Length: 541
Ligand code: ADP
Image (cartoon, rainbow, N blue to C red; front, top):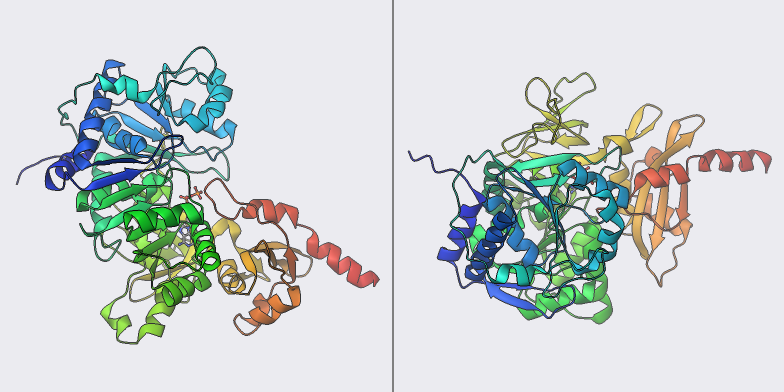
């Protein structure tokens, strides 16, 4: 058989020749809506590649972006790896210190940024000794980052001739993503051409996103965060119309694109879909052409899935993954066996499981000693993964991130069942151990968020003198809603095990991390001694 390497440029040339006139639409920071097609994408990515070569970028060099979901960022996804260089998609939601750390760790020599990041780039500039070229992703030069004008991308690529894509080893590095580093420095995961292509092929399958040329795909997870679940590549392979929302992820802005562009498929973290659902409820509008939503990054609240499917006819699939798995791990999709048990039983499984085994990613659960645990759907254990788009070692690390048998420890605690469904019960660092037994914070949150008026529910383990740790529930209500603690407890009672009932419920703002997830570290700190203080008061009173 032929040994054609699996290269990202191959996805682009395929898209340009198989569905060259399929549309790509992009919002931009300070410019009108942009509209072109895959042929246009190939043309301009080829011009950008030529520019990078002219700037001296060679195979293996790193080029960084600080950019939203726009067509120019999309072009870099092909232009940079296309010449054998590595695209580092910096995460603007990290702290200044962490962003500078990732840019320096990557040793990028070019930084391409959206105009809205000019103040950030101005602040960071003195700390970035490796960057030789700053380019603003705009049609106008930028004068806001100190030391003269920063040239704009449009003017720079205008005179370039698209290059012929070179061929090289499919194991070469292509895209570099850093984990959000909630503990310690961010760690880099360098995806290879081979891993990106295999991951994108798998993402499109019917047991995953189920993409086709009839779909209009709008990625609402950030392009800089784990390549937006590989959607930029999967959409190009499958000939989907592609809609880029820039940074405007509020409900009204998303609805405008869904309606006007005919979006059928989208994906993102639950926070975004809470805002969208809020918009639908307030405006009384329907979800237009939207057929399927994949939600992941943190657990999908059941109430959200029910509302989307029941009221708006949008099918909800849950996804689990992490930067270290490219990021697609598993997606919950129905099986004939499930469907035979009826809609209610199917929904119950689909909405409460993070996903189902798919080819390319093996899963197993183990105990503290590393012995494999039964796949019975109830025994929780440490979740390990293995496969061709799972990390082997972190970027620039000397040592492998795997155990002797090649398994990577995800840091999640999960159950597995005989039909291949996986359910996350906690992140190991968020686990609540009460009297030596595990309490699942995710299960409690899921029930609590269905209580009227509740916008976000977060459960953390806090110190208890007798049980070591007990669950404490933090509720952030919707803007105009009032939530009564007694009513929340009454709502929880029939749905969760008695000894899982939170020892306290507090109303507070819930802090979010750089990737829009509940920041449990902050909550644990804030409420560390809450129960002790309460017990003391009780003793006094
Ligand atoms: P970080 O948040 O540290 O940047 P990632 O974005 O890679 O890391 O997130 C990976 C983690 O997010 C997983 O290990 C898991 O704990 C959590 N996660 C992802 N999807 C889900 C899901 N559907 N349900 C629960 N947790 C999830």
